[in-house]
Image (tube, rainbow, N blue to C red):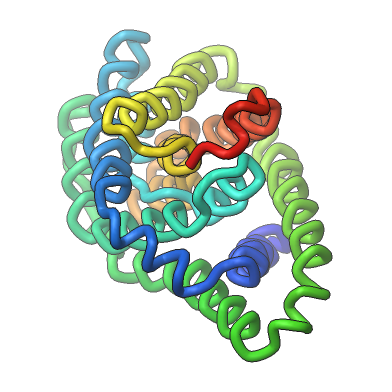
Length: 288
């Protein structure tokens, strides 16, 4: 399918465009104050699965939908989280760092959470071994390498980078919008069939985890830009990976439905979140 082939390229270009605006100093600043990373990891890897489990039980989702929601919660942050963070005036380097770290930790977290979700809600265990190392490699190729190339170009050719960065940013934003549209059109049948039954739970999950990430950041005295990055990282899940695990690895397409629905709803939530953060009062404009 054309969309499947172009999507990784679009995501890679988005990450390259983000890299054009970053330096090593940005990442050094993030890691010199590791509290934000620690809060982001707790939010993403502990709170998110717990909230997903609670919502699945509270909404009384059918077993397959509940297990599919847990598969989604097991996945690391999506590659587009960095772009959403930047557009929302958040700490882009923190978002990219969290995506990279959670993708590596997925080697341990994905089998554990997916296995628990399947066993608890359906009474079964995965019949196939989850290709977690392939997942980490794929995320590395789509996110880390393009960001590094963008940063390298900025370092070697700063004048050229200043000229192309605004154009690259506009193209990246346009690609993100196209990804949202492509997600809807390619999965519209599943959306129409299950949006009314599973959509409310997926929407509540997205709103709740973004609020939890933002709130936990506030409780731990993390600056506004860091809180934005954590919130986005929690809400923007790698739904494409959830769909892949359900359809290709587990060969249970019904488990992919929550991922399909969430893929659309999380991007709508992301757009609303961007608008809300960019409309913040002037007194908060300099908050860090």
